[in-house]
Image (cartoon, rainbow, N blue to C red; front, side, top):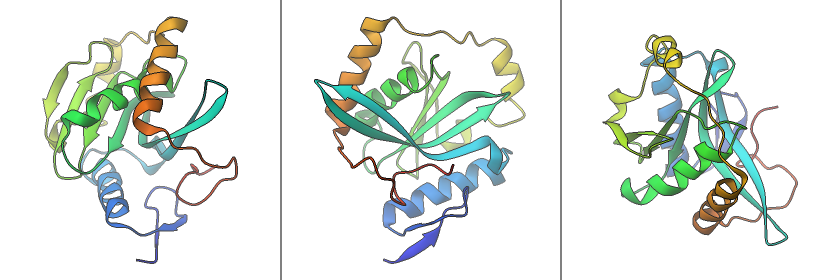
Length: 178
């Protein structure tokens, strides 16, 4: 399909049907939910070592509020329910604390999950917390980490869903803007 420009980073990236949904989501977070482009990281990489092999996984969008990752967004076509578990794993291991909100979306619909409990707290793109709601939500959020054994289990779960081995070199579809 050629190339397109990433809405968040301004970088040239490969244009695909899936990428068009990702770009639509990024625009939605900025134009409808009030976040600044600087509040959003696009295509963050998680690197893990599973059984001695380096595994890389990607998070489509990460929204930061007050210097902390606040929402992790994972896009995938099809059923949302099948995307919940790996998305929760991402939110539990990406930082040294659990990212409070996890969003799974197919670009048309979304589920918002409480990362700690794994419970669905909202449905539909409009249910994604906006920038105006964020301070109040942050006040009642406890940024907790997970024990090492649970972290290892979450890494294995993510790897089982996302076993994507890539070279350590960045390409336009796998590297966040630096």
